[in-house]
Structure formats: C-alpha cells, structure tokens
Image (cartoon, rainbow, N blue to C red; front, side):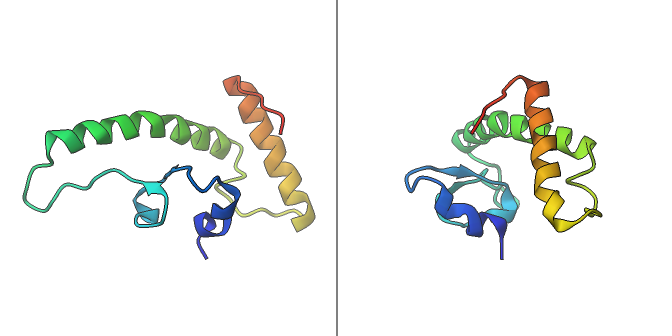
Length: 104
C-alpha cells in the first residue's frame, strides 16, 4: 500500500498535497500537467508547472540532505525498534541545518 494513501487521514480534508507523477490521480493531490503527445503545452499550464516546481525544489533539497546520512537510501541494519529514533534524529539534524527547527 502506498505511503500517501496510508498517511492521508493525518492531513486536513481541505489541504491539497503536492506529489510527483507517481501519485498522480489520488484525491487532494496536485501534480504538474503533462505535455500532450506531439503537442505543445498551453502557456497557462507551463506557468502553473513552474510555480509547482518552485515549491517542489525545497522538498527535493531536504530529501537530498536526508539521503546524505544514508538512512533514506540504504537498508536499515539495526533493530526495528531503533529505526524510528534514528530517522527522527537525522530529520532533526537536517531541520537544524536548514534553520527550521520545529518542535511538534
């Protein structure tokens, strides 16, 4: 089962979720408009795609920072009970690095 589908109930019902093309078609998601085959994309959609890409680049940069630690790109080899602690610690370090320390 897709992680988005499992976690969707944690979001507000009115909140839109920006996803990549892998989750296209899910409820409450916004994805870039694809270019029709052998046609040009309308200028309106090109501008919308640029705006979505500007927002998405921040997310991609954070994912890159998390992958630097190896937690998100490799198999976790410690006990399962420790995995959440390690992942949250790495995410905390990444938040600290980008200057958005948010305590939840």
